Picture 1 (cartoon, rainbow, N blue to C red):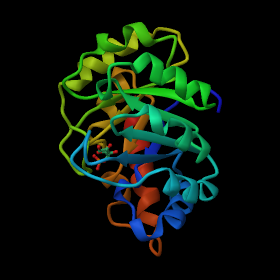
Picture 2: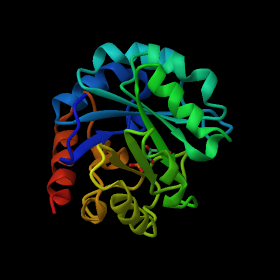
Picture 3: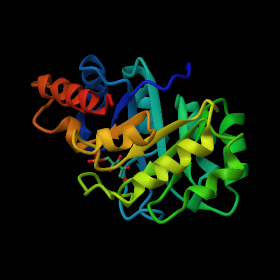
Length: 227
Ligand SMILES: O=C(CO)[C@H](O)[C@H](O)COP(=O)(O)O
């Protein structure tokens, strides 16, 4: 997985057809997705439950590119190896998920994956300042995690600017997750984000038997984000 700062669109399969994840991943990549974003929720750290490492392992053969696994779970550490073995390229843990995020990030890299750290909307950019040598990606949650289809929280744009300045030349992606669409994409891209997670704005209007809207939606977000 090479590093660059071009805009990458990462559809969240939270908005896909849960009965057809494998095909959804193939179709979304064929329609122009750069990464596939996989939302893991435990009903404890967030008020929703999705799936675990077995599902990630099952969809891995259907993804040619980057499988970007976002863990909205606590505790995190006991499950890192399982998600790495399932083939995750990036594993992102929340800074709020436990008292030892530095250890968690070490464990992610130790398991052979790129390490991401996610920040809830109420968590300041400064919380990752001491972690920058440990991370490959910082994920700014622009909704409260747990559900797709929520409204973008505009106050997070300033956090993205702060992170962009803090990161400087380091090879660290800034990922935005929640409420990304053609109206919000240019705001976060201008602030310095390069990975845009989008669920409802990508999957809206399409299906595995009618995938063209996926491609139109991805192209619309990408075009809007080129600032
Ligand atoms: O992590 C998430 C929710 O916790 C989702 O990835 C995120 O909300 C994307 O969905 P949408 O684009 O519909 O807002």
